[in-house]
Image 1 (cartoon, rainbow, N blue to C red):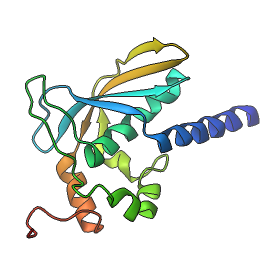
Image 2 (image 1 turned 180 degrees about the horizontal axis):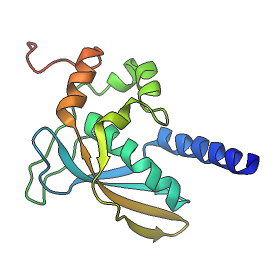
Image 3 (image 1 turned 45 degrees about the horizontal axis):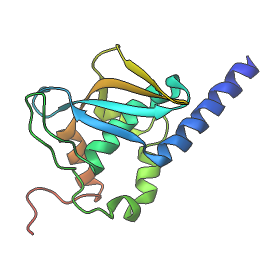
Image 4 (image 1 turned 90 degrees about the vertical axis):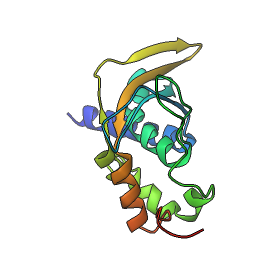
Length: 154
């Protein structure tokens, strides 16, 4: 039992280390319900399980900081955070927000248990479709003072 617990802790630490690098791709996967984005996120790791576990976290990160291109019948979306320095300015907030089991999980849901796995040299690229509750996420970030509200002036 101790060996299993220590391997889970090690996998979590490894996943967090990979998350700090934020290596992923985000693309539109179709139209989601109102107030959500339906996206396919591709995460990279030497371990396909770790890449899969990081997909939800990477999807929320992408909606906040990167946005995504249009396609699949949807339009391109800008990131929620318009200020490129917001991640560094609020580093403590985002460190806790993106912890394993952190608040980010409130805003993302895996829509399809099916995942695509592609082996590229010595690592795996794992893709999964998720729904990100962008309206709720925006409200939470505004209330925390991380991003400005849409109704604030220029």
